[in-house]
Image 1: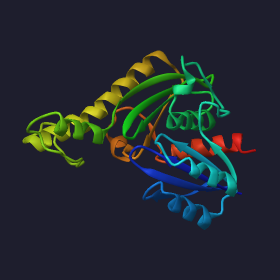
Image 2: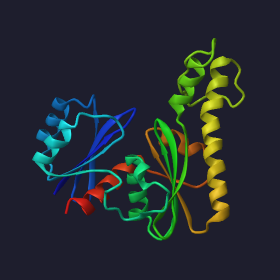
Image 3: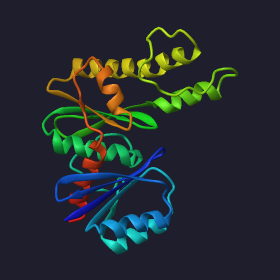
Image 4: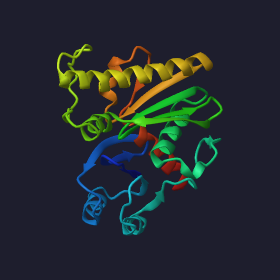
Length: 241
């Protein structure tokens, strides 16, 4: 049984193929044009498809996907393996829903903090009763670099390099230290605060930049770059029959 999981994010468009319960491969999509989606589906011939989208994609894509396989669009109406105790569950982003589902599925009975490193950094807390209580959102790494260039007169656009000094010696390394080390300290700070309040506590780091930050954190975490896709697969199994 083949399942195709589509993730239309603000920065990247990706897909993942599962055969039965096994993650097979990740596929980077150049765009969300109909031709691209049609080609992807025709190549892999999935039995089930699930779509998580936080962009304004062409609605015809959903019609096409539904014509090719059992299809589910992730939303606040999706049947989940957790409950949401937040004030407005319909405002929870599709990506956060998937991360919560993966936490409940793969780490049941634990207090889970899932940190998603994407365009924004999301902190998603799912307690041991499988309740999503909320969390935090802050700017992601690329957004921080761009903001300093856009909102100042003289600071340049700087990119991440992982061999930077903590004490920057020029403009570039000062900015790299501020952004990259700053994010690591931010994450460690949140983890410390949650750990003070909750026993049986587990942290999962995921997203495009997770592999770079995992080694910078002082706290013990699980790094899984495919965690969102695993959540989409779990939700597909629940909603696609």
